[in-house]
Length: 318
Image (cartoon, rainbow, N blue to C red; front, side, top):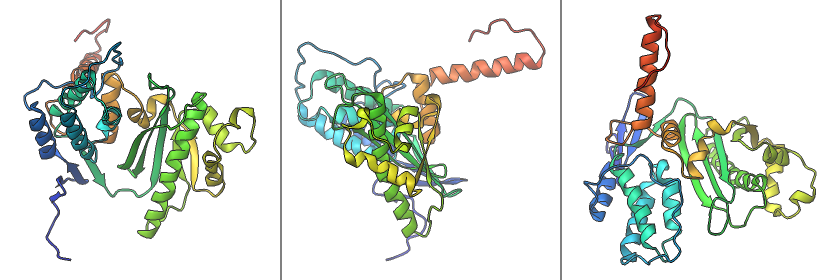
């Protein structure tokens, strides 16, 4: 091993020192993907996926499926520092075997979003080494097979260290079951992270706080009594109760409005999407479309100034 000085580049990831720690970016790699797709000068959009699903009665196969697969494979590596792309890329990956023209249009939307957000990065700091997690699911969110999507993210202090988007393998009969399966998925990740931190001499002395917005799933996880509604759930999901009992995890309720994992389970409106992105990754100077949030912040600043002058406020239009 050799000491080569401070890190600045590693496997295509640019590492920049900041006042609070490090910032991981893949700007150059993102631009290479855009150049390969011929979209370096494309118009940017505010979100990587559309809220309304595209339904076609007779979908037309995409003429160049090889290009589609190449771009999706490249985007998968880009998600190493871009959790905001995870859900949209996961959805696009599900169509790799036989992409249609509408699938390629959805892929182009992801690329247009990247075009305006190449400066986005993942901040890392060492202020705290306390592990915490957020988990959510989108019950029957897939309009084709009605399977649910699991999404979770794990923080070490304020640093996002792992996240996942995955379609559940079975169809959940209720939102409670979908959330319960999502909790089981993130619990396995938490156990692994706790063991890894222990080996790195950073043991977690307290149960890891796991935030979920479904009170029924939380009650099911804490209640050891089986009943008719849970008989069909696989035994491996019920290991959550053992983890709670041995104090590996501690499930807490959180408002759906504050659920950070919401970003990994569904397409979101622009304002909601940008709010969650700001909680997860660093937002440096970029040409991304900011209309909704910028107008909201501008309106708030105007209202504040008017209030300071003790002038009556009726309606403020921006």
